[in-house]
Image (cartoon, rainbow, N blue to C red; front, side):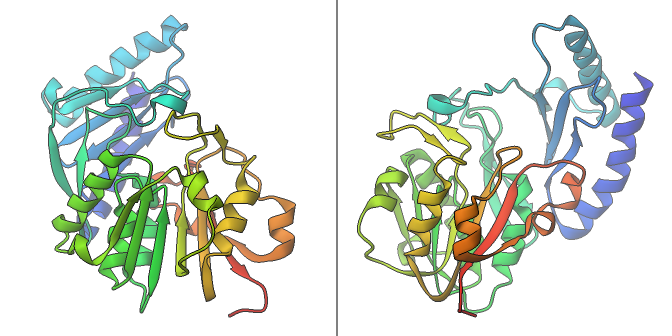
Length: 308
């Protein structure tokens, strides 16, 4: 028990001052650091989210996680109501867009100059992928980003960051709920949603359709796997990456580029993509300090050859 408390205290003393200095109200505190304590712990303002990653068939794991939860409440001196427990279904597929509850308990968290609405209890995720904070920082600091397309946009945090830099942003997702959430995030950041576009589409159908519009930057962050009823066919990111990338590259203006990320472990960029395009593995630069030592995603910048 002392080992997990010592590790959490060490992490907290390192990460909290850094986050406070940069005005980050949502960040990761613990990420499976000690194998005997299989959980992830994130802070969202005054709330803590405890992601249970135990094997339900191993009683030892369950006992240790019960001890860890009690220790967390004691260390942070918070009531149980501020510790949200999530036992995530690893087979996201058809469940990734399902609503799990109806609390409607949303609030805003600050991330540098940006604000994002989160809901810690009603969905599988919270509404904000913390590991993409560096990408949001990069987008916010861009000069003249032009036209940006955000595919699988989720709640639109990347769209907000691009729009803050002056981009005209098109955000596409399969979920009307998430698109409405994205529009609210625009308003939270004093951005007029009517100056941007939000579309609900089966993303695979959209990418297979004839090219109508072209963009200076495309953001592609698909799930690892989906067999959602909202899609005609199942989707697997490594299997379908060539179609995804080729379809995006055909939608780029001269000099434009694609940022392609996903969270599949041991993902390999296809040889055909490596041969056809100029590509850069920017994964290391795209992982924030509070995720160092973890591998939350891979990230690539892809450009056409013979272009700047």
